[in-house]
Length: 133
Image (cartoon, rainbow, N blue to C red; front, side, top):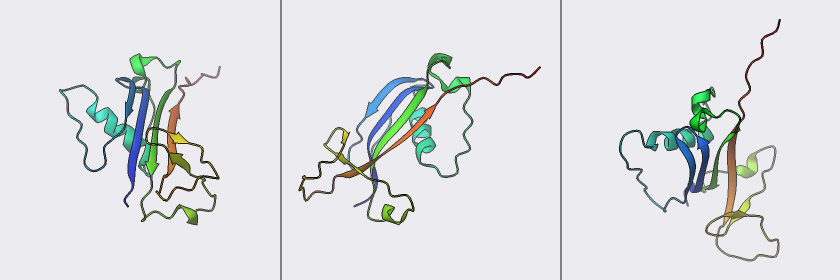
């Protein structure tokens, strides 16, 4: 099994007011005309998963430049066999995937299917720098 994004949610990030996407298994395409948000979706995924992102939030990253409202990028991911999260010093407890949402696992659940997932979220709140007099 390989790692994959099961659900991507983008709220008020750049030109995307609200997006909820459940990518299909396998290859997915993002198609559209110019300036429709294709690159924004890819940059949102990069922001979540790139270990070396040096992202500086500016007012243009907010929907309609409304810096009073936070933007949120969230993904529910299933980690593949090549990822051994159990070796991390701070143990992360997985959620379970019900086909549409990440849900708190039921300890009594006995399902042979691997339905352990993790939620990854980036939230930005804009704060103007105040001048000192």
